[in-house]
Amino acid sequence: MAGGRDGVPHPGGESSPSLSRSCSSLGGWSAAFGWARPAGARWPSPRRARGAGARCSIIAGAMFVPSAVSLEWISRSPQQTQVLGAALGRLLQRGDVIGLQGELGAGKTTLVQGMAQGWQAQDSVTSPTFVLVNVYRRPDGAPFFHLDAYRLESTAEAEELDLDAFLAEGPLVIEWAERIALVLPPERLWVALEHGEGQTRRLRFSARGPRYEWLLKTLQETLLQMG
Image (tube, rainbow, N blue to C red; front, side, top):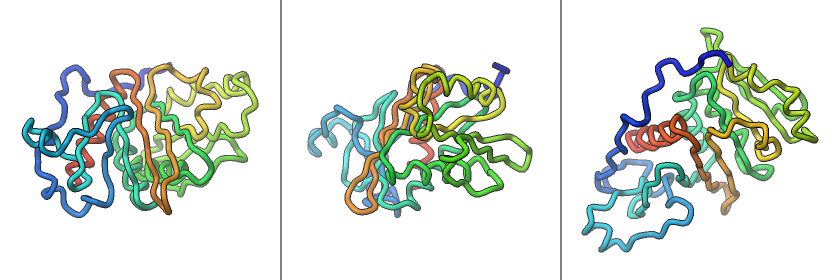
């Protein structure tokens, strides 16, 4: 694969973002849209958390335990899912692999629409279910690849797509990624989307590899700054 990591900050040199601001300082995003606890983590009691200088969720009054590789996010609307996607899209580089998993209507394409916006794609994103792969380009011609694996019957079919060729040119975002997980690079960012009540969606991020751990931490920091 051609080199696609130009300018990537070295994750080992990054410190965890500071989240020590009070919940009340997080602005209009508080109580509507924000980080939830990592899977498997326990919520600390408010008294113990405050006493230990605990970090604050972007959800007003909620606490979370930061994790290097896994975080959850609660979106209250499709618009919020797109905002999250746009923040992620601005961080993407050639060679990045983002796998999306979730039932129909869970918000996968909505998230991709935001990511393409953050990439500064010139065309609107539509579901590529019937064409497998759509390509969206920035004004400078850099491509953003959007693959829908729903209709792939086997990993052999996925291998025939030559994913490495896509990654040599731009980031690759895959809906129904669990169907071809065996042929994807082991280092990647995985996003599992789940239905909640009404328009609420839970997004579970899992980062594998230093590049994606850095990407997830930077996304977290960016969204907190937006608060």
